Image (cartoon, rainbow, N blue to C red; front, side, top):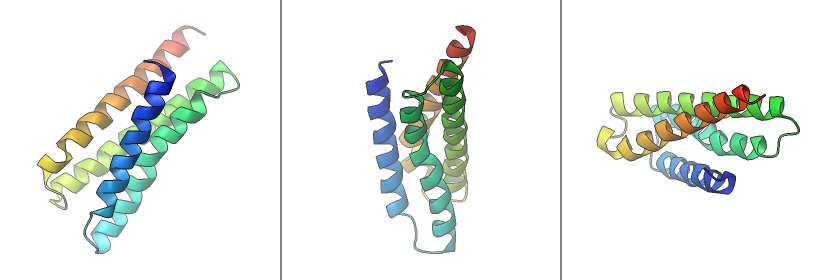
Length: 117
């Protein structure tokens, strides 16, 4: 995938996370889960953008791995939102699918970069 296409995709994902958080219930659960998913979900793209500007292959791989961990964490928060019924699971299906795809791309990119050292 072209790096600029991936940057755009991760930015759109972050914007969808922001939109989700803005619609969470205004209570303790919404606040805590919202803060967590807002941090991890928006950092996926920030880490990818940083990786594309890495100063070395080792730095690139390290930052991609951080982005993948943030995507995995975001999946966890999406699961909690769905399983706690804070958000109807069907409303999270597309976002969860996109997060899984981003995680797979970041993981594969990191593995490829490691093999090509």
